[in-house]
Image 1: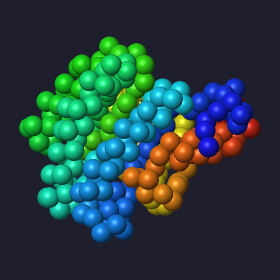
Image 2: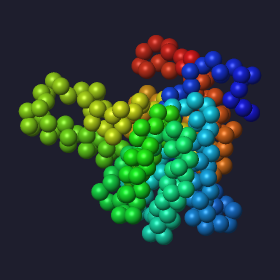
Image 3: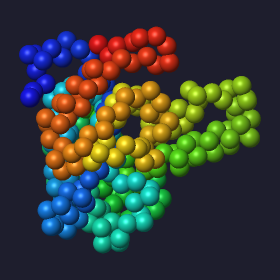
Length: 248
């Protein structure tokens, strides 16, 4: 099944921003008698495919949840493998992303990021900063509650310094102090593996997003699964708190 003229969606505006919670690597591996690390490696290959699919479908912004602030509770060996895969992804695939005019952006806490990871993140952002095509946002060491708390602290500091008045504080001001300040809110959030929760991901930004929960595990999330999720988005009627407003 293709995202094609025969299906009638070519005349509709694609979602500008899709965010994905990539869930199920470990379960995919365990179901096959493999180590969880093998699942994470397969998951990286799926990520590359998802980036290509998003570009093919005209998705301007793609955000992926790669490592949450809660993932530090996982076994040290698994965390080490995840970091190794991130390093390999940036070193091997950054040139291709840059060549394809993809801008890479990182959101998440950086203070406790390992010293050999942080320079790679900075390099990825710096190299691709001027690119004007697809935007790839990697949520790494990210937690939405911490993001909102940090924004609140920044606003409180400005208020205490007399830079803001109480009446200046509104939802737009809070949005402008988030790490995603110049990124549109997601139109569609996809979570794989059958789980139906946000897990501290883009809580503020998801206020009016559409949600699609798919049963397949992340390593099995191919172009077909991606297109089916986009199809489901097109079937929704988006109201944004008001009367009917369709996605077309």
